[in-house]
Image 1 (cartoon, rainbow, N blue to C red):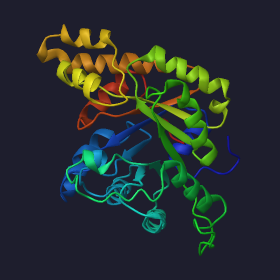
Image 2 (cartoon, rainbow, N blue to C red; image 1 turned 90 degrees about the vertical axis):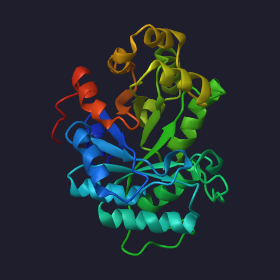
Image 3 (cartoon, rainbow, N blue to C red; image 1 turned 120 degrees about the vertical axis):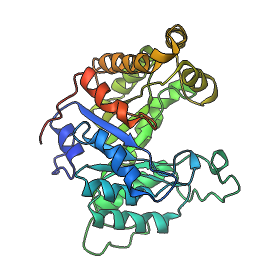
Image 4 (cartoon, rainbow, N blue to C red; image 1 turned 90 degrees about the horizontal axis):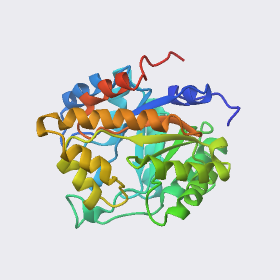
Length: 311
């Protein structure tokens, strides 16, 4: 998809055609570095890169750049998430320069959850850019060596391996591949999707993606995640916008004894990984074990994703 030399391990994995595995680490609501170090031990050597969420759900947490730097020190490649919610284009570009100087090479560009959903609902949202505009800005910084205003960047281009998110299940369903196409046109090189529980519907989405030829232009990593309990599954199915949890998964967890539901959730996640691997155009999986990082090694092992290759 690109003849330029990869800038990160994740880009190397994908350009070599290896099925990629990424994970996610949620920063703490405090400044204790040991929390990062504890979570990181479950992910090191298990995934190819680790997403650092940027105040996910609009809740104040340790900043993604600092956590990404800590992961680099621990020998783990980070993917720094950057949202448009809290920064204007000046702050965003400034942070990108700082991130690059620190050795961070993977960026996931997001609009960000609205501040009204978080723990400071009275905060003023910025949204100077949206995710597609942010992709365009970062793309220009890397390909043309200029800021959003066209001014040249001192020292030359700042090139990241640039990613974006996509939700195959959000309404209107028919529009989602076209929104993905916009992100690809804006510069996205890899896509991480919303968590998949409805595999047949995701397969339909991928068919449309292939029909548009997008699978030849961008690496698509299918989002997956273990569910801890029937209650959690029911909450995701009924309270989380854009989530599609089929009735058969709810019923399967409901019939499982409570003390075995975590293990059943892991089994379901592994089964979904095995199913999405068979869908043409899927280049990897993004395992989102929200506040359950210790489950990731077991999932990766059971799904046959270990050991991760040297590149």
